[in-house]
Length: 143
Image (cartoon, rainbow, N blue to C red; front, top):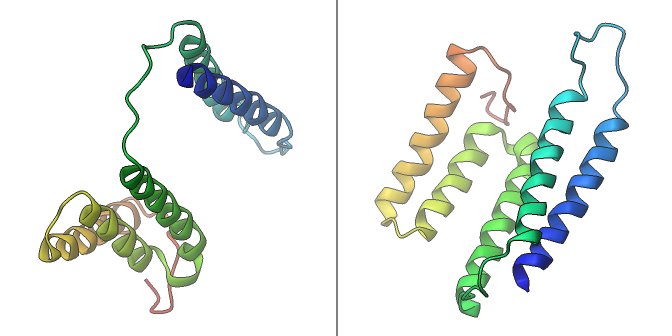
């Protein structure tokens, strides 16, 4: 039953995502595909996947204990805070803290957590900002 509930939730999310994509205004400078194509493709994939879950559910799943669900909720909160703090503290600091926390919750040691957070943050910064030239959120220190 929980698979079907999840599938229906996914279908509703896909429908909402489609309406949001269709509300995107097209600029006169847009390319041949336009800005609506990619979100609509994502919505179609989400809708088809959710429909498959509704029509062919798995046997009743074994849900994790409450403590594990609390850890999953904490990870979701960290990702929401990451999105909120990204423009404030910048990409490097926000990514280091978020990836460090997630590494810690996955069982990394304290030193491993710090190295994972800093390495992930600097590695992504070097690749996407310095090599590809993409703009990332600048923090109070200018990076």
